[in-house]
Amino acid sequence: MDPRKVIICRCENVTLADLEEAIEKGYRDLESLKRYLRIGMGPCQGMHCLLFTAKYLARRLGKSVEEVYLPRNRVPLNPVPARYFIRRDWREMTG
Amino acid sequence: MKKGLVIIGAGIIGVMTALNLVEKGYRDIVIVEKKYPGSGGSFRCATGIRASFTSLEHVELMKRSIQLWPLLSEKYNIPYARHGYVWLFTREEDLEMFRCIVDFHNKNGVPTRIVSPEEIAELVPTIKTDQLVGGVYDPLAGKASCFKALLNPLAYILRKGVKLVESTTVYKVLIESGRARGVLTDKGVIEADKVLVAAGYGSKKILRESIGVDLGLRNIPKHALITEGYQGVFKPLLIDWETSSYIVQVLHGGFLIGSSLPEEPDKPPRSRLKYPVKAVNVWIRYFPWLAYTNIMRYWTGYYVMTPDHHPLIGPLSTVENLYIATGFSGHGFMMSPAVGEVMANYILGEKPNVPLVEHLLPDRIIKGRLVKEIAVFG
Image 1 (tube, rainbow over the protein chains, first blue to last red):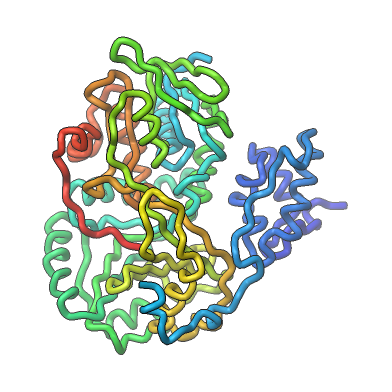
Image 2: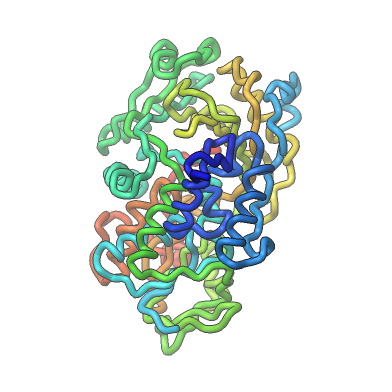
């Protein structure tokens, strides 16, 4: 399959070819790949792309998935509409 | 391992210093990083860049930085835009105070100006200006991608032969007869002729262990969140002076909101659930549509504050070949191009390219000669 047509991150539109190119350039851990390619930084928060990339990277570098550790997930795990936080008493609440 | 220079910390300061050294032909460098590159403040920052400070030291350093940002952007493919800053004032007395600050800026080559609510509405599409008495516009200010600003130069210097050692903690700088001679890490000793401590708040412990000097650094917890990415709405970074909060639509499209909550220094932040409440309520007053955006990520970080809110940059007078670059008080990312340049000057035994940074030598903390700056936001 053409790696330019394999989408590995749907939120940020990253292909397998992009991942290969980044690995070739020397980005070989998930934290750097995340910032360089933006995989895991879109609305899905890496639920699909990061696991795939971790597995791919481990196989590519001959390491275990644990060794190419997963970046920390940040809250909220799913995007939350800002309006849920509107409060009349926000000044008192936030000091 | 024996090297010319050990840099402690692969943050933006360590990387920019190494980049300047490599560009001057000095490549015998190893960067030792506790976690992974950028893992401290660099990748958590708001990415704003401005010269509109209230001390001449900051202004001169940042004017040089703003000359360098576009060059770096072009050379290393770093997204950067001179989109400006707008300070928003809801109280007459704040606007009055800023008239003097704008005078100070203008006298020193920073083209800020007072703007009316009508002008703010032109600079910032969709903003509601009914509570505003005015603002200050800084057209020289801007923003850049903190990820590419660190990762691209890093990839370049690694290709040129600089070594990076990750997941390695430095315990102390080894000193012999008044000279630095390497570092002790959890994986053994790295010998070197020179040592640069650019480890953010971690620098405090390293220097205490090494030479018993307290740099007076305090780690102040800060909060930030970002929404999903949207098409461009407004370009400048906005500061709400009354609540000390900022909002910026980063170049990738998300709205990044930063603010502070009452927190204890040197401790992990506690008020986590309150943060999105403050961020949203401060900014929906100006942008009602913000209520319909989705908050994607929320994180915390620290401002590494010095007693006078100015960085500690340069050699220590008491130990030869030991250099410090830390305590950027929330401004390390924006200053990093100019700081990398002057640190490379110091390390190569040259005069600093920005002469006024000699006021920022770390010795001043030990000797109690402080510099003044009031403008720290978020």
